[in-house]
Each structure stands twice: as structure tokens, then as C-alpha cells.
Image (cartoon, rainbow, N blue to C red; front, side, top):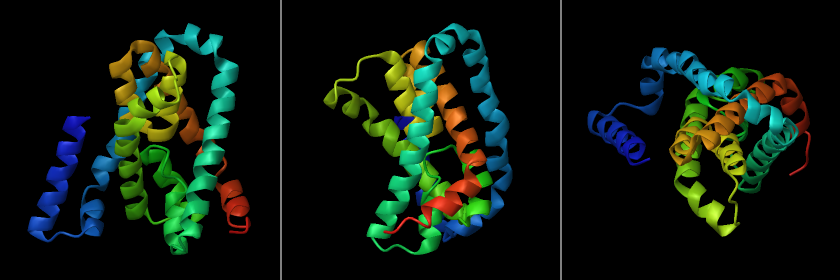
Length: 201
């Protein structure tokens, strides 16, 4: 976690010192963002090697992914509306809890801004990874499967990296939940666009 935060701070300081805008930075490193997609495939290897865990908990994991997706989207948009943020920010915040390749794929159909989407995804991942352990202690979550599912659903890649530090079971579950959450959000993109923005604030 420390390395990730330090690297992010270095990027921010460099952008500020060189007077490069966030929009220009995102536009120039699109190839790096594209590489995140193939990189995520590496998580499939430990998932494949631990199919037994997935078979044993498939029902709870499926229910958790659906619940996490709906809660993440609706709570983000509702809070943004409560704070009367612009609609473009509301739409960009809707996909903050899935990893960057999936978030960018959904951003177009729902009208989000790619540069804002990337920023919100990064912030969500770092924040979730930083406070995850504290939350698990506060609400007395001790099972590895539950910890992995929570980190994978709430803070995608950063949370999954933290889950692997906790243990192989936590990491495998986090990988699976992270990927499924992204797929579910992409599949439901048009439905999300129709339903969430017809819900009164």
C-alpha cells in the first residue's frame, strides 16, 4: 500500500511542477491504461488453481457481487446528487468501484467523462485498500472469503493486491469478485443508465 501511495504522490507532484493538466496526462498515457486490461488476466491464473473455493461459495459470491454492484452504483449517484454535483460527475462516479478497463468501457454508454472516471477509480481503490483492515476489525469480519470479497468488490485492483497479502484464499476470492463485478456492471450499463437517473434524489 505504501508503494502505491508514494507512486501516486510522485505523479501528482510531477504534474504540478511541470504544469501538466490531468486531462493531458490521461490523454497521453492511454496506452498504459489499455495495458491494464491484459494485466488483469493474470488474476485468472490463481482463480483457476482454486476452483474448489469458488465452487464451495458460488452462491454467496454471486449474491455478493450483485448486491455490491447495485449498492456501489446507487450510493455513489445518490450521494453525488445530495451534494448537488454536476451530472457529468454523477455519471463518472457511478462506476468508481470497478477496475479501470471495465469502468472506461461503461463510461461511454452512461455518459461519464473518462478522465474523471480514472481519477475516481484510483481514489476508490487506494481508499478501500487503506481502510479495509480497519473496517474488518470494527465490524468483526474474520473469514478470509468475506474479506477477499469485500476488497475485490469495493476497491478492485488495489484491494485485490491487499487481499493477496492477507492470504491466497482472500486473494483468489478478491480476484474473482473484482472481475465479476466489472462484467456485471458492463452488462448492466444501459440498465444502470435508465434506472439510476430516473430515481428521484
